[in-house]
Length: 233
Ligand code: PTJ
Figure (cartoon, helix red, strand yellow):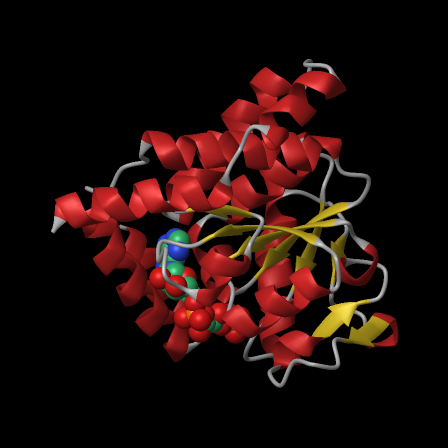
């Protein structure tokens, strides 16, 4: 069913062929996790929600694969964590950006950034189209949630002083390694988990949220996921 969503996304001009290859790579890691959320991933998801709830300006960066797999959940997560949404693509075209925005708007009438050429800013050290960000979105946000990303831009966002949360099934990817909070889980499970966690946490005081973040060691958490994958092998 998940594959079909991507294939439909490909046919509808949302997913690029490279996105199908990236998905296959993700699936391979997911098999090693037993295709379920580990307790380590759940812990990272919880801390990620704490950070989103504490941030002044948080934003969810959405690409083709993410839009094809879980558009409704991404829009809901933005709503419950008071985050904004920006479409940001590795293989950018006006047609794709609009198709993705249409899919997201179907779920909610929320504002979607990354569509207006007049609002374009450039991340100078990035070669791919992912350098084009919205000057009112990713550029000025303090926390960026990356729903599937390439390593160059993740590293660049961290260099810019942003707090970066990523979902990536590959614990060895540069995105996974560079992020402040790395969720090693399939995006189709991670986002619904985070919505539920947000509902539990949004009444907690700031001190509680801060404590969860302070007690979290991203590298140690990733090592545990890697060990789990070794056991899977
Ligand atoms: O839509 P665009 O134009 O932005 O292009 C999207 C792709 C995916 C082609 C582009 O961002 C890309 O090439 O990404 P990478 O560098 O291949 O990184 C994708 C990462 O996501 C890989 O490490 C995969 O293991 C991982 N991944 C794939 N599917 C999932 C996933 N992680 C979580 N959940 C998934 N369903």
